View 1 (cartoon, rainbow, N blue to C red):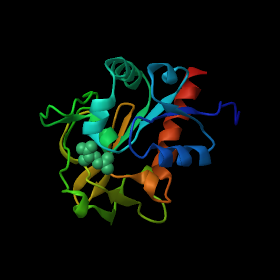
View 2: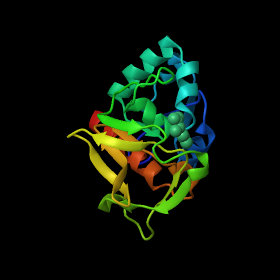
View 3: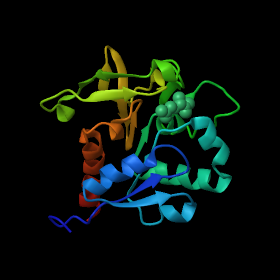
Length: 202
Ligand code: GLN
């Protein structure tokens, strides 16, 4: 317990993809981390990270039971989707291989920045609360490209003039992979959401 706040208990969806890197970042920030594979794993968690990977594979391996539990959890707790995780929380073009939860008012083109060979790194422009000495570097790996944002969505970061990180209520979405750079400011932002949620609840 620090300043009356309980250590944050955060889940990392561990169906597929690069969940170990998110887990490491959260552990380094002093969180308690649970790998989530079943609905029961969500019990007692205060927030969830849905990592990147491949949305078609995630769709294939997810049971209906887990899908229902994730829908319920992500509608009522802070949740952060990176890359494929962002796709799974947003809307995307019709494709029978991908069933997203459509919880965020955000539309994406799943591979809108091109294929694996077109992956790239770039400095991002961010809102003042994310600004630090250096601009954050976005790692874009077969990244989704935002095609439409609803009116309640706020942009947190841009690459050139395009939004690449947004928030909608308690849903944080990044098209790139902050867990793969040494910069943990997006993890700290997400943690701050959870801690302020704890303050409201206590
Ligand atoms: N474009 C991929 C997909 O459709 C996501 C890539 C990633 O998560 N790095 O799932």
